Image (cartoon, rainbow, N blue to C red; front, side, top):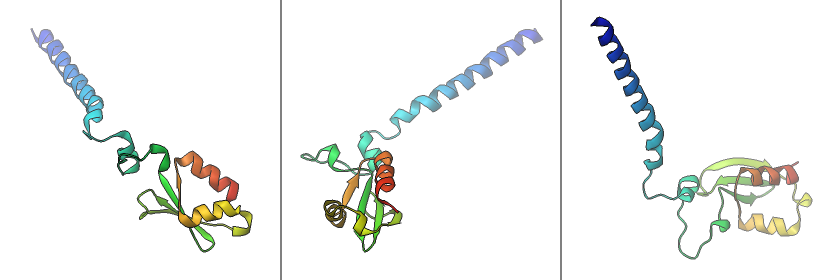
Length: 117
């Protein structure tokens, strides 16, 4: 009888652990109901008429001889990069003065690799 009780207890504990594991990893999809993937990753919603390609995760703005990299909310500074303006094309300088969105980290690192000193 004692052996039967031990076996039932082990199966009961394993069942509870399996259920806990299941609910832990399946409940994440419902963590933010009503939010799109873009709202979660970028922190802003896209209104009608805007396309996803217009905005990115990072926002670059030229301040003197420094390119300030903001997160896309334009308030939180991600990094500051000193850049010589003579090494940049005029069109890029104009874009950076107005502000330029970068879509992802890969594009940001490619930009920094090409233009930072």
